[in-house]
Length: 331
Ligand code: UDP
Image 1 (tube, rainbow, N blue to C red):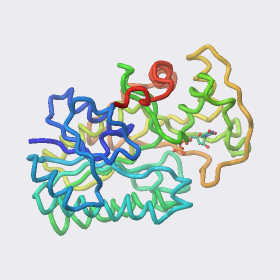
Image 2 (tube, rainbow, N blue to C red):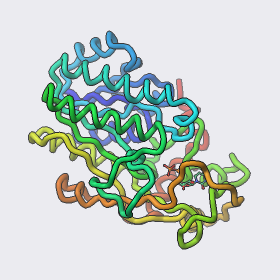
Image 3 (cartoon, rainbow, N blue to C red):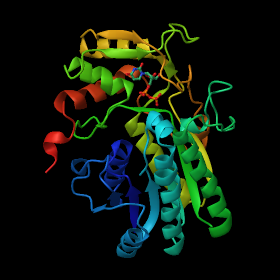
């Protein structure tokens, strides 16, 4: 029996594929390669195609004895989602329905869904637990929240059980150094800082220095990508043991400001990061920090990367050795 990973050639997807492979699972990847990288998938069977196409899904489910699905395939840029909400509702919500329908059709009843802290919107209390009101402030968060809603209804109607994992800030790379973060365009803080040190950018813009935080910059909860992938394996176990539909936050529980992230990078690399104070980025809440005690107690999740510096070290290892990401490795 195989685990089907949609978006398995993306950042978190490829790390989860690697973890499943290490666990000895039979893994199949489905990716349209619009954002994902073929080189990250290596020797795993890869079906290149789109969730938009029900006949393609039918073919993939028909070819493999799929036991469970881990669904990453989605667009994930908040700013772009505000500009083009149609793309987000179509790709992330409407096409997810095609996947769910294919699962029902082929009697696959277990799904781990890649959700996000963006489903909560502006926090009314921090740390954020799963009981926090869901009030997304952008179409990206809204599209993920819509899928969570569909999943609850699909369990009631069709017995499809799912676990939604709401990530806070994914960061770092596999310590092997051969898979890592490579987004086009890159918008995330840690890769942007590292690309600056590699001479690919002149400076890092600090988006907002007047937030109500200790140093005036935004505070986020950075969690290592391998700790995220471990949670997917645990979620698959929980579903195999019969657990019903639920959602879990995945974060470290520690908040770091933009300036603290820059300090951590300077400590790891021994280099000074050129910065420019810039206006706030629209839609950024001041503080996002997770309470992940539910994932710890119910899934038995124990993040291994306790410090931001340890996370940054793995990211630096990847970026230093792959300054152009996967570019040079693509056949
Ligand atoms: N950030 C920044 N400069 C950048 C990119 C990001 O100051 O070039 C800030 C951003 O405002 C946020 C934090 O860094 O407070 C993390 O942003 P990122 O895009 O990495 O993740 P997000 O929190 O949006 O998921």
